[in-house]
Length: 252
Image 1 (spheres, rainbow, N blue to C red):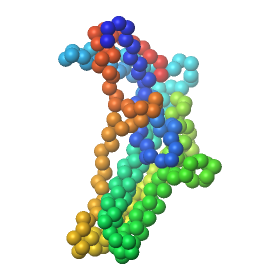
Image 2 (tube, rainbow, N blue to C red):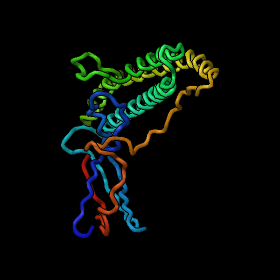
Image 3 (cartoon, rainbow, N blue to C red):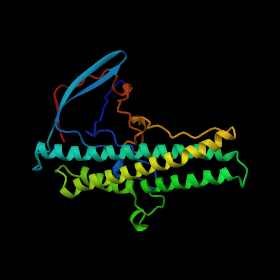
Image 4 (cartoon, rainbow, N blue to C red):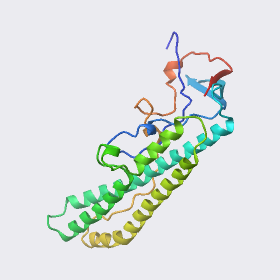
């Protein structure tokens, strides 16, 4: 628009994709802060492109080195990826349960196949509950699960600029192993029980069930730190006609 315009960059990447649960994963609403270095800001309006560069430096008030920031960033990105993988597995479980709900909706009460579908669905739900808590209260209820522990670890790592502790590094590996176990359980369950269920559905002329493939996560669906949606794009109308200053310097 005409007049003074301001565009604010928080120097953070997009937040991770966090599996939905009964309460907010607070740390998971933020992305890691970018590393020190040179960055390009590009704004486009009416077919014109406006570029400028800026330098992100270390906060000069702290003692951490660039190597320390790199170690912190790498650890944060490992947990960021862990969140994404939890969401991907969660989506496959929920997607298969939705198929079961559709297949069950048209079956008569007391049907033998309906009972098998319900039993299969319960086992899938048990896997879902290994990923996310389903009761509010967190530590009070003692039902914190993989997602909640991941959020606690992520928050501890991104809350300061120093390198991760040995415990935090070990915790990343432990949570990754835990997610791998749930993924393996999902693979075993579907391979052991789904073929027989599909044979029964097919013999009755009903639609069979399919394990949802790993879906690409859409960055437009990641929550921003303000609780909205982060799409990584500036509003082109906000910078119309703006001439960007050169060689900006920011401290991270």
